[in-house]
Image (cartoon, rainbow, N blue to C red; front, side, top):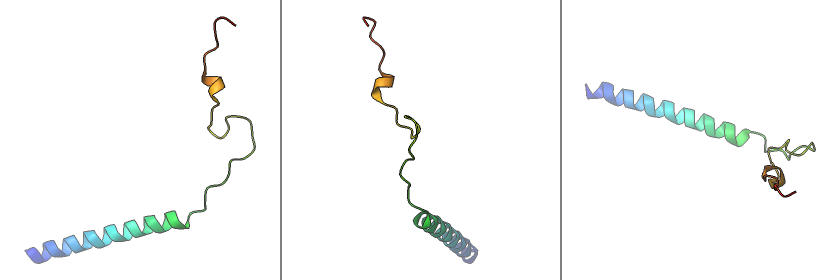
Length: 59
């Protein structure tokens, strides 16, 4: 019975190793991050603090 368990464990380990290797290879082979394109403010996800600040009631 332990022979079947050993075989099953070996299959799981090999499958997990192949999956992790494929995942790592895809991450290493992926193109690098590109600089943000020139566009309107906030198009890159950055929001200036001035737009988040509440306006003063005195103004």
